[in-house]
Length: 156
Image (tube, rainbow, N blue to C red):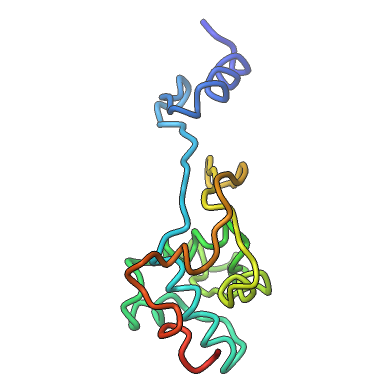
């Protein structure tokens, strides 16, 4: 029989490949996430909207623009510090997040091609453990199927 500390240490040592936790039977795994073309398109749309009217943007506005599959694409941008979430109203027990986002100055610089970010982030238990991979700019994140100039039309 293991102590709780021994079980925690075992999970922490094996979480890179994934392990079933001996305490709670859940999968404990470090996920390697890449910045995607969908995330890049969402960020550009958020930055364009922010330049017109600096405000919090709700994920439903982005869905109406048919930019992403859901709020997960927006939320992942926070792992690169490209967006930030509006603080959640703790008295509202019907939701776990506000759904409101805005680009950070870092995110605006990335959208305009002024800076690059590491291609991947390492996530464990909804926390960023680190960043890795090559540096990529907004054009690399978009990939070849999207025209950066067309997406940024009106703000360049």
